Length: 124
Length: 131
Image (tube, rainbow over all chains, first blue to last red; front, side, top):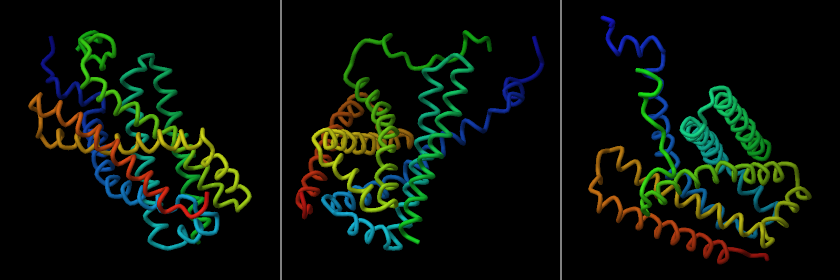
């Protein structure tokens, strides 16, 4: 028996607001990705069959570069947050879970970073 | 709260089978698929940055039958995750919890995703100027 409230005990675990923030960021990135995905899908469909120089010319256009960079940043963040939930749901052994959580974060940053670098290299 | 009292994660095999469940799982499956697909996306962009020779390698893969199959799967995953994601956002806003409405929208979302996949591939072939 304890006189400490449940909230106080949960608070000491340091996770109370983190989960809400995690949930909220997943939704905010999802909303941002709706128009970005539709724009990207139409753009890529229009680029079907384009050779290297046509593709480079498309990426070099400032607004295209900006929107692709935003799509990359938000999509990889959304991916990382989404994979977190999947891993937390299905992987229960603590050290394997943490390894997966850290691993997917590193891979998402590596692949997202490479994609963003490629766009900057072409556009600048 | 004891460890055993904590809420349980979604179990995949403990429930009676229903189509809603498959559509819900498909959201996660397509999400993970898209995650793996970003490797292809990064390869494509890095190759474009590296130059025409590297880009030609990606082109050869994308235009091959296995390449087109992967891209078709990626396109469907993208549109299903997008449409079903909107369905989830509507639920988050507190609407559409009536079981019949929720089930109906599951099918509508699936149909919209298939239609969007077909439309985008039609556009791809229509805009294409080289094989």
